Length: 297
Ligand code: NAP
Image 1 (cartoon, helix red, strand yellow):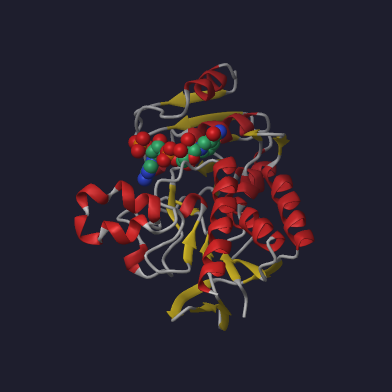
Image 2 (cartoon, protein in one colour; image 1 turned 45 degrees about the horizontal axis):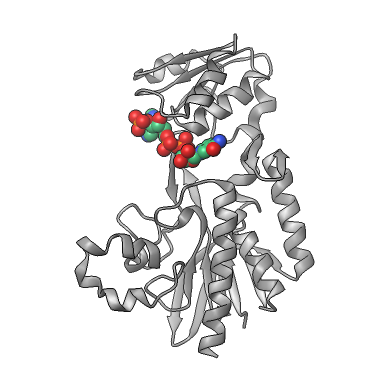
């Protein structure tokens, strides 16, 4: 029996693990594929205080710090969360694991193209940048991710074309940096066809994300698939009177409708989707979990 099972080994999950283990909670973090989550796929992080470098290196430091604090790490996909009284039974692959509290920190999965291309398609520039040395590539998307990753890829590829179906929504600073690069072109308001994309040698796709919450009961999810917790529910309160406000007012910011089931990071309703915010959110959730476990014995 664990005090806390964390589902998801990204910035939120690892930060929560560090706090929980230092607070003497017997804690395990499960990760489906690779520890670090989205953080481990970012080529360059320049806005995390005290750190300026590769995402996977920051993720490794977080993991080492969590391990040193006493967190256990394991691989496995969470398929179901069941609660009985104050005990949670989680199906991780084929196993059942038991805990007194659970933190959902699964973040997001990249939204995928709805069609196949005959040229290589990537959703992670850190993983696949070495494949595009000297090539003519396209980057689909117009948000911060697309423009930032296109800038990084322009240092490796011969020519980069950002293709955005509407006006770019990336920050003005990122857009200015992109415009200064001689081998980077931007096509805005452009509905490029599959055939046109196949003229490029490699296509990178950064068209947003979907929350990784399919394994959770529907009543803890908001309409967009993120996990509703105290703060999110309070924001919605004016239009959702039937949820019973008094009850929610007593809940912590990171707790869901199910006592003992918490969420942190990008998977949580209303997240600002920044690494530093996810790390802070994980820490706050861990403190609330310690409080919950103290109160419930
Ligand atoms: P995003 O801001 O949601 O942008 C998604 C982009 O993909 C938009 O240009 C959107 O076009 C386009 N898109 C969506 N579905 C599409 C489809 N089916 N086909 C073609 N294009 C499609 O996503 P993001 O760039 O991943 O950013 C997510 C969040 O992370 C944001 O809050 C962002 O600020 C943050 N972030 C921050 C940094 C940083 O601080 N340096 C870096 C990366 C991300 P429409 O506009 O037409 O919908």
